[in-house]
Amino acid sequence: MTPRRVFALPRQQSLFLPAVLNPFVQEVNLAKADIIKCVFRGVFLVPIRAIFLTLVLMVTWPVAAITTFMHPLKGAVAPMTGWRRFMCRRVMAFLGRSYYFFMGFRVVVKGQQVSSTEAPILAVAPHSTFFDGIVCIVAGLPSTVSRTENLATPIFGRFVRCLQPVLVSRKDPDSRKNTIMEIDSRAKSGGRWPQILVFPEGTCTNRSCLITFKQGAFVPGVPVQPVIMRYPNRLDTVTWTWQGFSSKALLLLTLSQLYTNVEIEFLPPVTPTGEEKKRPVLFARRVRNVMAQALGVPVTDHTYEDCRLMISAGELTLPMEAGLVEFTKISQKLDLKWDNVKKELEGFAAVACSCKGGRITIQEFARFLKLPISPALQELFALFDRDGDGTIDFREYVIGVTILCRPANTEEVLRIAFQLFDTDEDQRITHEEFSSMLRSALGVCDLNVSKLFKEIDTDSSEFITFCIVSIDNIPDILL
Image (tube, helix red, strand yellow):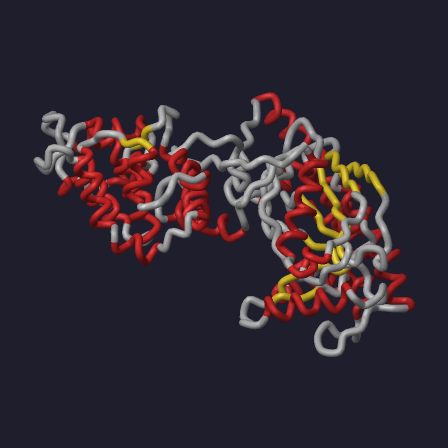
């Protein structure tokens, strides 16, 4: 199965119809029967499991403290040997398996894990929950990439030390370069260091697809063993994305289940070609394609940075959170320079006003952008062609560009949108124009728009002006 391109589904109405769910959103609608079962089972299971988990932690912490006592994590760091290695690979791994057992996890392992000399790096995907740490236990506690701040975490910080992680610091401007150098050094140590386990996606998704892999694990140019994870459960209580259940809610829901199934499959190692050693991005893509094919899911160009962009867009109540990401990526393919586009915004707005609400074809769209018709341009055009009739409202494109060029000025976006949808230039707009304006500028659904319009149109004139469409008034009514 060849991985296919996917689009993302935003939380609010977007400018296009996507093919798959937004990978950063997890929506779980629990039926009443499931809620009742979770409550009744949780009353008995959660306290019992909490007791056993506490007992395991009480044993694990001193073992971890002894294992890492007087063993440096910075400077001239050497891999653990002798009794320390035994304590880490055997005793700590056993306690880790016990911990997940008492949480109710049933683990099925498929395939065969190779040695560190055959594949120094393990690439694990999809990364969808904080429970994914179970793969470290199954893999024999390999080294991981971890933030320096995690070492200071009470209790669990000591466990992280046992893994001898490659440390990443947000405060160090050279941290990224140093991290890649350390991974490269360990990967080429000839088996002296244990394998390095990496989640190349860099953030949690809902497992609907594989997002772009970060290149750090592929820079050394050594064989990588792909490891895929599945959670084949009727009720998904593990997926943890930026929009969905909180970590506490997921933990309680999971502890309330009789058991939680997880499958971990080790795929055959992938060896980079000469070209892929020079261009790690190609190696990362091939490994991702191998994993996507084994999982039976598509791939997408979204990244961890896109997730952060969506969060920012949501906080600003900007439209099409995932659409902004797709918009940006396609624009990069077209080599649209946003500084130049920003200068031409006035001209674009004039073109949009001249359309007077009319719709344009892709030929006109290409002429306005001064670009040839290409697959990337067709993809950009498709973002705005909601009904697939081969035409778009150019005003919505202007609003989208305005959002990208001036993301912090929501009121300016509204002002431009008002001007574009005021087709007869009488400084007032109808309910239909108002609905289109807010849908494009803020991603507001039609139901809320109708309520908002009635609240603003106090004299029932069926017209409103911009002076009363204040950015301070809108949230109060929509909430």
